[in-house]
Image (cartoon, rainbow, N blue to C red; front, side, top):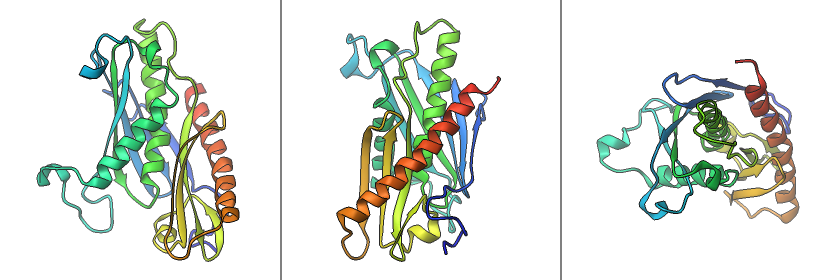
Length: 240
């Protein structure tokens, strides 16, 4: 029995609230169980120096946790004067994941930054950030098309992420903190709606796991992201 009472292949309760950050060109508050991440897309009419004159746009991300997003207060990284290695790794992951489904030529020379701020953490914050950030990005592109800034939608597909793990010898989907902290192995899967794999992050916490066990985790991840893709589409298809 999982601590949450969920079936092995069951996601935590999911909600996607578009437009939560009213000043951003696109935003989404994603809730996966007790994990909540606010994703906001900001558009700028310039690109990094290495892209100037190429006609290509840029999509990047920043990630952070509020001090009381976790059980004990964490220092603000701004107060420390530098970001942790974990923060840098996660925001690069989010940026890579989003760029995997964007035609940057269709953007022209503009940049979109996705700010992903963890309000409450109960495991899977990077996965929630990727899934919610895609919605925020899609809404920002929709806004730019409405304003006649873009001739066509630069999105080439959907991307979402979910965690899976081996807990008590069983493969389970969408780990919360209680499971993640006691897992024999855990992995994050970033997948596209076309079936592509953007990134896999897997670690054996105790004994090495087998290829068959990895296959079971991948199968759960594909089923989980299929549900996430449907939820993303439902947000975009809902009446404004």
